[in-house]
Length: 438
Image (cartoon, rainbow, N blue to C red; front, side):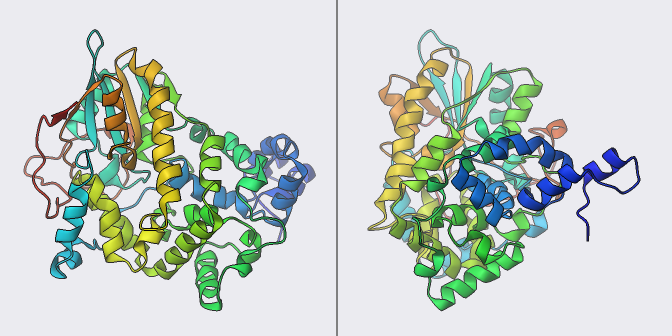
């Protein structure tokens, strides 16, 4: 069957014919048949180093994986908007019933600045700036901006996110394929060298559900596969192809208002960070993810509930308590310090340093992953060390009536009269307004 795409009608004037050059590129590089995109992409692809071109020829389905990987590593990818009916079941009631929630709360309480996802940043002589912890998902409950967040965002002069490379999908693809050593196993090694038969069968099931053959990804590093396939299927089926997660949604709104959007890191820097995690730790986390394949929607629902309840430091201990080997899956626990050190701590230090020029101008709105905020080496503590006064601002969740994701037209809309919050806060103490620490 010939490959058909948007380019066919345009180039053949409705004849159903397709330009031979476009068809050739589709067959070699792109699994979707979108000929116009393939033609645009060809110069970029041919500029890759030879190892990357060989990787692309042998595994064209990797281009689809790039999009899914972006969602969890660099923020978004093709519309990861989750409908309300797509939700799993939170583990929190189960943890409470089993008497495990007290231990989760106790562990979270030991983390400095562990409560809260939104802060005001003040320094004498400057207009206030703001720091928002995000989740890199498109669940409607996350996309709705609480009133204090919406007001601060509207009043700020600029937006700073983790990386602006995610806003250019071609640039992101170029970064991922420019250096195959960041995403592929050492020469001669495949996933078969690390997986037992049961683990391999679980991986094949997950790949099959996403339409990707095992042969296409057998040489990829575990971190890359985990990033792309940890997302539940229901979070990857929204149409439109436009990134819909909180980080990029804010970027789109800022650009519509003609505000500058800045990034703290490059895609290459983030890729190098993940590739620096020892292969054994990567594989242990990947195997743990495979063993929990039927619970991933519940994992995400638990994380979302805790995030919206502003209990950021409870997220990791809750997953550790709820899922066997959950600590390995989220890169936590004894013996898995590389993940926290490289993916969280080292990047916190880098981001805090690079935030300086933006915060020194005042009126800056910063949006980064929520797990970068808490801890002695979290952004809240690091910015206080640099002389800024950070005040926690309560940001309660906004109820969502519709299953459809929020759009720029309804940004930050508030619940209707009599409508209640969509997410419970769990067993945690009530959020304290005006919690200020220097």
